Length: 222
Ligand code: SAH
Ligand code: DHB
Ligand code: MG
Image (cartoon, rainbow, N blue to C red):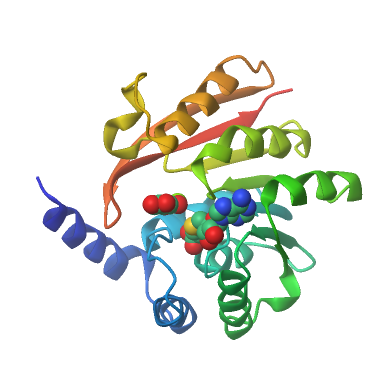
C-alpha cells in the first residue's frame, strides 16, 4: 500500500461520491498561483466537514486556520440561510487569497474572516459573544492546538462538535519524546482532552491524497 494507491482511491472517491465544482477547483488553483502551501484538506475531507456541519444542523461555525479558504468554502456551503462561518487567519496574504476565493464561491455574506494571531482573535470573539459555535474546526499552527481547543470549548454548548486536523502526523503522535512541535502540540491537546470532563473524543487515522495523518473529533457533553 502506497501513496500512489491512496491518491488513486481519493481520485475515485472524488469522481464517484464527492463531485467536482468550479469554485473549489478555482480556489485550489488561485491558492497555488498565490504561492500558498498546498496543505488544504482533501476534497473527501472537505466534504466530510460539510456533511458533519449539515448532519448537526450547524448555524454557527468557527474555523481556526483559513489558508486560501478551501475548507471554509466546504463549511460555509453547509450553512442554512442566515448562518455564519467565522474563520481566523494569521497571514494577510493568505486572507486576501481566501477572500477572493470565497467571493468567487458566492459566500462573502456568510463568512466573517478575521486576520491576526488566533490567540488574540479568539478572546475577542468570546468577548463579543460570537458563539456558541455548533461546530469548530481547528487547523492552524499545531503548537496552538490546546489553546485553540480551550477557546473553542469556551464558545461551545452541550452538543457542539470540535474537530482538530492533523492529529496523527504519520504516526509521530505516539512518540512521547518527540521534539517535533507538531507532535508535541497534538500530545498536549490529547492530554487536555483526556483531563477535560466536558468533552468526549476520539481520533481517526486517515490515508489519502494528503498522506498518512488523522483527525480528532470531540463532542461537548456538558
Ligand atoms: N483549513 C485550511 C488549511 C489551513 S493551513 C484548509 O483546509 O483549506 C493553516 C493556516 O493556519 C495557514 O494559512 C496559516 O497561515 C494559519 N495560521 C498559522 N498560525 C496561525 C495563528 N497563530 N493564527 C491564525 N492562523 C494561523
Ligand atoms: C500542514 C498543516 C496542515 O493543516 C495540514 O493539513 C497538513 C500539513 C503543515 O503545516 O505541514
Ligand atoms: Mg490541516
